[in-house]
Image 1 (cartoon, rainbow, N blue to C red):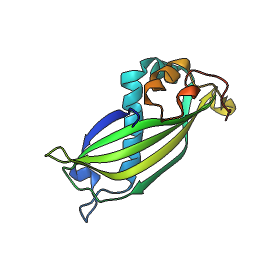
Image 2 (cartoon, one colour):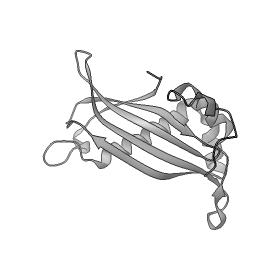
Image 3 (cartoon, one colour):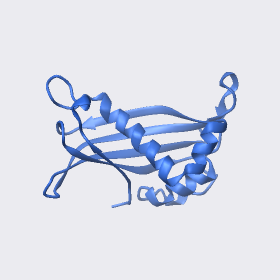
Image 4 (cartoon, rainbow, N blue to C red):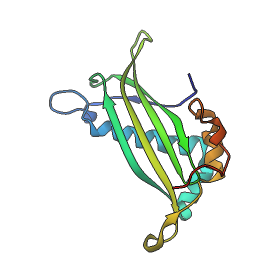
Length: 157
């Protein structure tokens, strides 16, 4: 099993609907939060570039649901790098419920693809994935993706 970046979340009432289970859009929010915390903890140089002119456009996001979760379930959202090209990054996310006894079960699985862009809003263009991001992602590559890390020969956008 490949390593993953982990974001922990305790489900609250604000994450649930009237029936008491987690509303589907929250899974997508947690993907974004996991990605943000990864940048904050592992690639702060990229955050500085985002404040300059780097834009991380989310191109695609999806999630498959396997089991319901409710308030006060402890989740581990585990992010892995699935694909890295010159200008795009694809992640996978496992949503794992961690029970008080330490047992775990997979409750959902998601995917996300982002594109790196630069330039003013009227003239935004694809840009290379910053080296700082490539380096930060290297430990989280899915099996078979290691050769893509740190290279600039992958397919473009």
